[in-house]
Length: 255
Image (tube, rainbow, N blue to C red; front, side, top):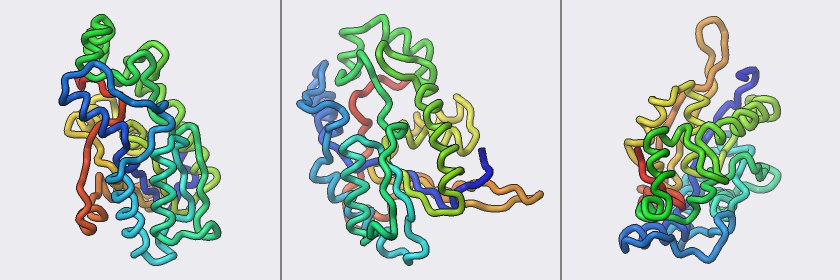
């Protein structure tokens, strides 16, 4: 799988979405269902999410052209597409300098029957599923009509193979979702279930945070990707833009 790693790989969670805001309101109000009019794929950025995305783009703009992304791979979900477009615009990445490619393998984890339910809603409407999920753990639990983390990892394996095949030695920016960030880390850092869930329990991936890797040669001449930054938030802090860590919609209780 590591025949041709990109020279630089950035993985970014989208900016705060209207779904994040609605989810927080539902949780704080003790509601069972998150009030959203959109399909999950159509949920846009919040006003703050737009600010966060612009701050991230301004940070990329400060890099030299030879250090900026050459390829942007993006989830087809609206909040990710908006984030990627704003980053490219604010970083002044022309279409000739950076190619934007939507890839359905980067879509949000599918929650199936648990879609739009709060923690309270899952416990109230599907107590048996809630008990099963707590017993099995989120890594392997697949809600009816939805995906487990393993399902997400399976589709990301083929995405990474495509990246090594088509974008070797190039600078690649991935814009997607919280579970995608963690599952990419699982694959790239060769973690196991316990290690990635320990990372997940420490806190949600902040909106517009950067996790990045650089290609390097190790003893024996093997090329590897080395972890460079984890949940890097300097772009937002430098712009005095509030940091948000809300989970994507819907939410399920952490084990």
